[in-house]
Length: 163
Image (cartoon, rainbow, N blue to C red; front, side):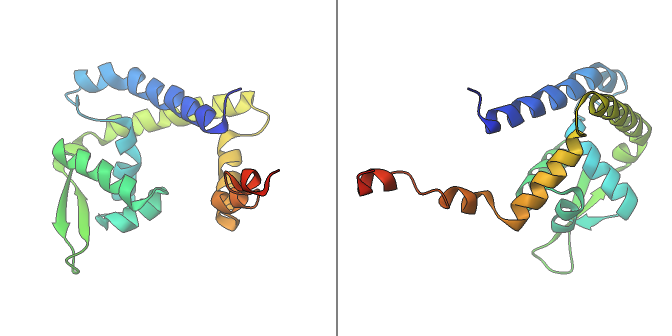
């Protein structure tokens, strides 16, 4: 029997991998060999809101600070963003580079194609995938999964009780 975590990772791999495969040749042909589809939410957020601290960027795209920071570091390595110290030395402000701005037509076209593919997938599902995921996130924010697990006992408790 396949576990929920395995199913979630597999769906993510199939979707994210397909995006990368579909555009890998296009990126290389257009002189963007180091661009990754996971950069798109960051690029689009910075276009919409201007330079942001990593914390604010993470919040805007709905990922952890750590995930945003790791992606921004990769983007900086490949010349898509720069980082400057903020007013508070603990904050780093992320800025798009000229290369990222020049690539916006390609990034926007990729985003539009992916959104169309998601709408097509949703039409085949009993409930749109994003709706299920948003409802799941809301439920986990109300009551974290750890609490749900602990409500059913910790490993070894039933053995210690002799159940």
